[in-house]
Image (cartoon, rainbow, N blue to C red; front, side):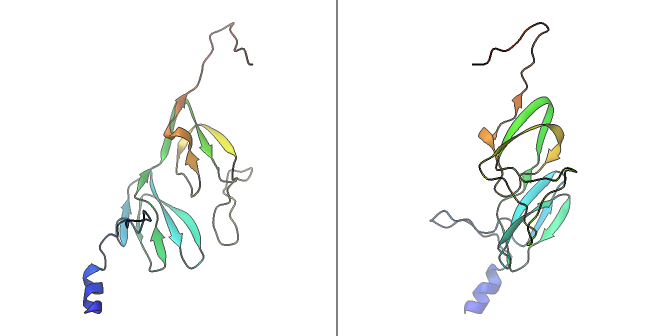
Length: 147
């Protein structure tokens, strides 16, 4: 009985239970369009990583999809955003990873990001207030008074 029930439910997307903990989103295969990403948690190494589209991601038994496909953050010219807990990058712009391949983050720090290519938010990164703000442009011969 249980084996037939397990086979009947295999491949169906899992949902959140009453306690609010989330399960897998989208089943075993997730198709990502360009500039979409998902966070995947590897239960063997206890690390989370980002899968960036365009790609077709097939979930392994030991992996757990943490969120539904999300759009990358696109900052238009003369705008900025604030990211909490940003990932650490080298002077050449490459991610710094630990021995398990998980991106290292600067917990408690904030980073201001200006116009650039669309980018994903890595695990633990948070877009402050979920908004992209316009830069304040001053007219010629004017100044801001700081308190």
